[in-house]
Image 1: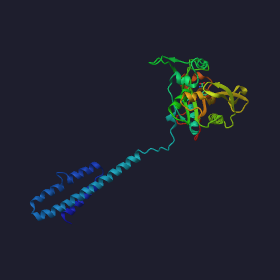
Image 2: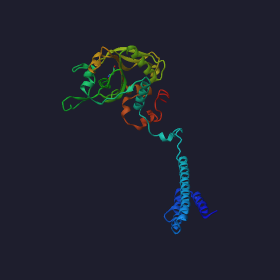
Image 3: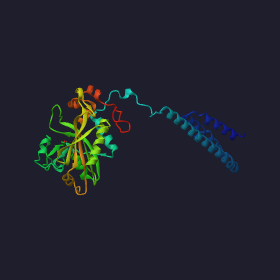
Image 4: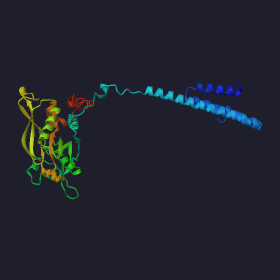
Length: 360
Ligand code: DAH
């Protein structure tokens, strides 16, 4: 074997012997660097005559290219191996169940849990979630909902009034989630099928009232929706939420300025032995208000009341949470007592869904 052949063999052995990218770099400098072996050979060419220089030069170049190629191939192999090791070390099995100690302390507040459950049920029925501001103006909270100034319903709401804006228009903390109906209809085109969960405020505080509480509003408007749809939707919701398939419901005629006709809905329960149980039992419990959207409301929101119709409802979240989870005192919701939260709260990873179940 000639000298170049030997040199190539040695070079290949050195390249193969490099066990990491740094070692390989040292080999490259030794062979191809400015003071490297191949470079010195090239320098020696200047002493040769033209023909020999041509021949030798070409042979050196081939050798140089072969070595460069071998280094490149080794580099890729080393990098791949390094990546494989890292991938194996950093592997996370995302299918493993979470460790209980990771979620031992935090709890989801029953209000959040109940809101999530309500959203899951109506989400399944094709509703989307709409939002509106907590600080409302008189038009959205009252006037557009067919509650004109001086209407006695305004007194019923124990409104918190806030200083007016630059135009002197009074602002209020919304007394219900119904203004989100107005905002939704003003901002879009029918059909509408939304729920609006959120905080509401009334200047009232005793055993059964807190100045801040939560409601979920519902609104369905299209050309054909009628009272039968309202009954079906509310029945479906109550049975899903309370997880009682044959839960009896009663629609009682009632009055709200923004619906006509209006109804209050009672669910069946029993109170025998002093214990409240939701389900068939001869007794009734009021849980929500609803009705067919009043044409005046549609008109105030810019919707053609001759063409469109629909229903609306409003549910008190604390109330349905207390009933389902046996929480006896409304005010404890807002005491921020960790012992209470540990007792009544929910595990963060038990996300309510109609597929995996609402509550566990
Ligand atoms: N806004 C009512 C309240 O706070 C609840 C309500 C009743 C809402 C009937 C509605 C409805 O949308 O149709 O007392």
